[in-house]
Image 1 (cartoon, one colour):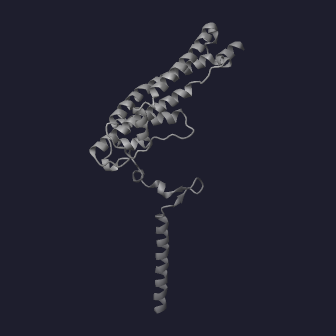
Image 2 (image 1 turned 180 degrees about the vertical axis):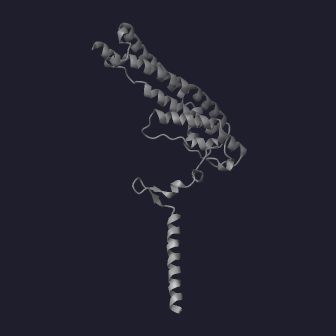
Image 3 (image 1 turned 90 degrees about the vertical axis):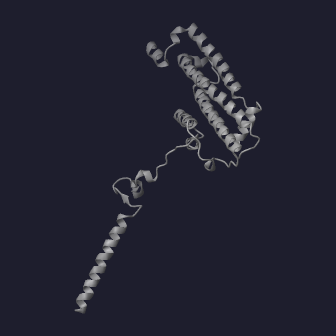
Length: 243
């Protein structure tokens, strides 16, 4: 009798151990599936809302701004997109600001500094886009692609001009922020404000210089195309015509 009871007890313990092991496997957070394909953690199946972060405030969209050392057009356009959205959003509660503000005047300056900086970043992104369609020098052999240069310079000019209103807004916000004689812990943003109000940083002049130089290059290309109107076609089309 005792021997039978002991056997039943061992059998129950074994079943419990097996079920416990199976249960532990089922809830393993790092469980891997599809052994014949890429291994993916079970955590990837957790409802996405547990990991989801929805930008809501101006600072949230500003923090989405990112520029790598080597960037392309899409990254610049994406940054412009997020920063433009940021300009239309409300700020976080003062205690969650990007720096400490102790008075209403300091918070007033903080908001104007952020508006100033975001407008500058949009302006810089437009200028970077423009520079990617611009050309520093036009040499005689570049005129083999006069048609492409003409189109590229038109795009560059539009981006440079698009940057101008954002520079004007940045200057307005810099002047407003300068009314509060307290330096906030915003690093280079305070430096930008100081250089703008003192005239040390003048992107208006820089953009004008870019446009003046671009006008000179456009003139070289237009004079060449006026002399050789048959060259006003895509380079591949010209090759087909010669063949």
